[in-house]
Image (cartoon, rainbow, N blue to C red):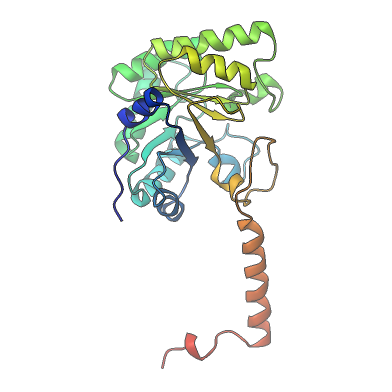
Length: 268
């Protein structure tokens, strides 16, 4: 199967034309094949894999090696979506040298076409350095999961006038310093609309309403597979988790009753 290859230019053109951008997280080869076969625009290998694949309470324990490992798997199953990978906690915040080195390593070793970082003005110099090193960068504002301890939990951001002004300034700083898109997570809809209208680069919303240039969801959430918690903004398009549970129960029952394997499952 061959799809038209999506690139950064594809995403920027969609912003200009008003066509919505579609993005889903992805962490493995099989899921990448299934998702990209439907001509999705972007696959994001998110550090949310810490929660939904590795069983961590949050994303803080995810490493650069984890991100490279999963991105390589997704790369092999991707039919043509733009492939973006998260830079995990403390892989870019401390020094510009660390930021560039880790971004370059992720791209070189995993096959990712861009990286995503969380934060605004405070990391603008790192965004510029990574972009200047020819590694495309996506920003992430609002509820930034790597700052969960600072925020005191998963809370909507930008509800006060001060935080509204800060988020707008952060978005403008990311754009000015080379980011080609910005993810807005758990931001009030009208604020997300304001940011989207002010920026020349696309905004991708997750729990930020209808006016962003595109949307992203965690694939395990929208398929009903991850059930530890379900954010308000998630829409479940399937209940794959329940399908798996039923299938496993039926398998166990048939094995115990001697109903599997049957004639068609046996080699002569």
